[in-house]
Structure formats: structure tokens, C-alpha cells
Image 1 (cartoon, rainbow, N blue to C red):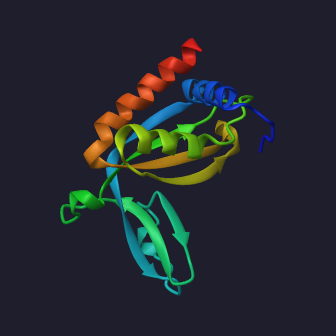
Image 2 (cartoon, rainbow, N blue to C red):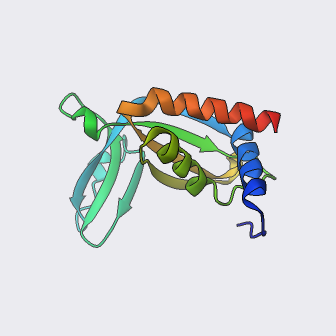
Length: 148
């Protein structure tokens, strides 16, 4: 993790650059959460789940939606893989704040590690109600980062 003092303007410029060099993959399916008791790992979901997270009481699996899933519980998933050599610390908070400020929405982020593909990667869950606007915002910000 990079720890470097920056002005807000320097942070904005750096994170626009991070975004402009990131690969943003839009997953073809929509996803939702399924909960299972913590003492019963949902092995039956392991073939289709994108991620598993647990707390003291439940396993929460991020799984593809089915026909019975209400749209308000469905999310578009965008995966960000980052370019090596560009410090991306602060990216999640920064982009989430931009989504909230410009689109009025929150998001969820699940992070993973793939050493062969840039290291840390993020899966961003974006409510379907604002998904087209969010994708447009990401594209605009990637372009701004290329111009900065």
C-alpha cells in the first residue's frame, strides 16, 4: 500500500490516471446476495458464486440472479484490474464518492488478489437503476485520466 502525502488535486490527478490505465470488465450477468448460516458453508454455490464473505452469523455469497430476484436486489458488476506501477491507494473511496456525488448512489466493493494480473482487483456492485449512467461516468473519467 502506498503512503504518500498529496494535495487533494494531486490525489484526483493520480486516481484519474489509475482509472485510465485500469481494465474495466463488465460482467455479462447480474448478481445478488444469498445468505447461509455460518456453520453451513454454501458449497452448492461454489461453482457460480463470484465471492464469499462471512461475519459472525452468515456466509454471504455473491451469485447470479434468477428470475425471482427483484430488480432492486440486483447489481451490475464491474471488475477493475489495475496496471502495475501506478499506486492505487484510495481508489475505492474516491470512486465510490464520485458515484454518490454524481449519481446519488452507493456501491459495494469486493476485493481480491491475482498476482498474475496486476495484483489487487475490485468487483464493484452497481444498482441496476443507475448502471448505464455509472458506466458512462467511468468512461468519461477514464478519458479525463488519459488527458491529464
